[in-house]
Every structure is written in C-alpha cells, then in structure tokens.
Image (cartoon, rainbow, N blue to C red; front, side, top):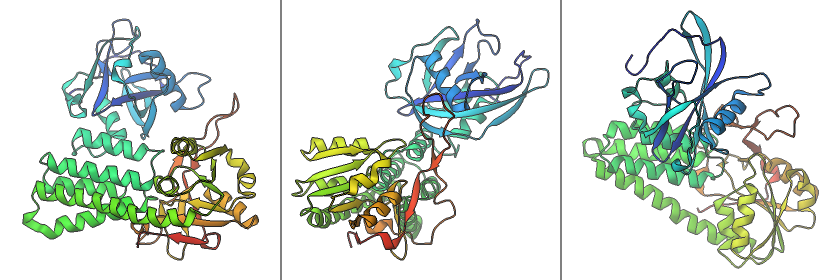
Length: 415
C-alpha cells in the first residue's frame, strides 16, 4: 500500500502507542533517525512501547510526547480503537492511537530519535514512506477519510472539546460547514459532513438539530444547491442561533437580576452572558466541575466582568447552595417533560438545592429540545478523571447526566 513499508524487525511483541500532534490544519510527521532500533529512516508519529509501571496507554503517550517533542501539556482530542499488526518474523503488536492538539508548532524540539519533522496536511501522509500501517492508525483518530483533512481535524476538535458548551460547539460546527461550502465542496460532501456533525456529540441536542435542519434545507433546493447557496444557508443558521441568544439573555438577565447569591456549575456561555449582560451585581458561587475543571473558566469570565465570584469544590455543593437565592444551570439538551441534560455534577447540585429550598432555573434556547427521544448513546460520552497522587487511575466518568424535572423550578428559552 502506498506510503507503508513492511520490513524485517526486531520489535518485541506487546503494546505500543502512536500519538499524532496537530496544530491548525496540519499534523506533525517525524523522521526516525539512524540511532533508533527499528524502522530507521521512516516517517512516523510520536511512538513508544508501553513500559512496566505505565498505568494506561494514554499515560505512555504523554510521556513519549514530552520526551520526543518537548511538549509537556498537549490537549487530547481523540483516542482511537487499537490497530493490530504483525511485524517482521510474525511478532504481534497492538498500536494504541491518539490525537493531541498543541497551540504553537514552533515549540516542538526533537530528541535523538528523530532527525527531521514536517507539518503536513492529513491527505499528504500517503506520499511518505512510513512505519507500518500509519495511514490506518491516523484514520482511527481522524474518521471519514473522504472528507478534506482540515474538516477531519475540525471534527476531531469538536468531538474533543471539553470546555465549550453546546451553543459554542454548534456555532463552530456551522462555521465549518459554511467554510467547506465556500471552498467549493460538492453538495454531496457537505451533506456527508452534516451527517457526521449530527452524531458528533449525542448529548448536545442543538448540534444534531441544527445539522439535520440545515441538511433538510439543502436537500429541498435539489439542483439549485450551489456552494454559495449552501454557504449562505449555513451562515444564516449560525446567525439565527445568535439572534435567539439575544432574546434568551434578556429574559435570563431579568430573572436573575434580583438575586443576591447565585450558584452555577461548569461552563455555559448562555449562563455567563445572562450574568454579565444585565444588571446583576450580586455574588456568584461556582463549582469547579471536575474533570476537567471548566468552572474555573466561568469564574475568570465573571471576574473580568466585575462580578464577584468564588470557586467551590464539587464535593462542597451543599455548602455552596446554603444561603443562596438561585441555582442557574445551562443545558446541553432539553428533554420532554421538563428534565434536562447537563454536565455531570448538575444533579447533586440540584439535589442540594432542593434540600436547602433553593430554586433551580435553567436557561437554554429552544434548539436544545431533544426531538426524537433520548438516544442510547446520550450518556456514553466519558472523560478521564485526574489521578490522585500515586494511587490508581480513577475510572472515566460520564460527561453528562440527567437532572429530572421535579428538581427544576423553571426553564427559560428564547421562544
């Protein structure tokens, strides 16, 4: 297969990791030096064999990235299904693929294992003589090979985004679709892209709703679905989202204005806008929302707006609501009957609020209504909790949970 080379190898059996680094629309390709034991002078990602004491393949991937490139804290975007291969004299190897993002491509510093580095478009990988099955390995973390490489990278970023709320992720996805159409992508390619967006984050209802609505509009055009027309439709959908936010923020700001103490959790651009765009001058208590701790982002945004905020550990939700006037939540999805889906931690906060007689209000635009019932995969998205010292690695926890209707006092939407 083009770009792949099988060679006689002394590689021992076992588990290895291959990590791809991306920056912007490029991925990093490394040229293995003459000093390495195997696959000399072939192109590869960051790679290494799992060693005794490694708790997970992800831990090993981070170690190898730091050793081989000098990057200490890359952002994990994707962990793909392992790739099994047989090398040399029949030794079995299982490759664990990962995709990470870094902000500054100039920060890469090579060690002795590599003598050259290239930042390339994903489509270019097949033009290089690589270690075995590197193209297949990349496809595990960048799905849908038929889409342009920059689109595949953007999809990976959207899937790996653990900071942005549902509205932000939806806006970015619509912008991606508009850009794809503006660049001349065929209608069939745009429709394929919208299919991927629709299932990208099942718990984020507006993402799927916006993608399906836009797909229906494009299909209704039939032969008139020119790239510029498709791009205009995608841009219009994004604008509509912003108009709805303005109406919602006006309602939410008015509802919150009279409170002295408000409790929030995680990051919600809608909740932050309600607190910072109106006349609210009270105190905001923010739960850290670990992992990954996006409550800190909320607290910083409030402080920049001149609103006094205090950060609370998630375990202190009961203390945070004591003496508060309101708990204000965003939502990733609105379910029939008044229940909501939101970041894990919202349920114990709402239970604590009920115990202390504090109202829970939700601010979320109508596009977040889950139209077709709860998909089976809704609560399957997981995030790795942080290790505690030298103890065992905590299990990955669901990123979202359901807050039942009886715990919610009021839901404000843009309708």
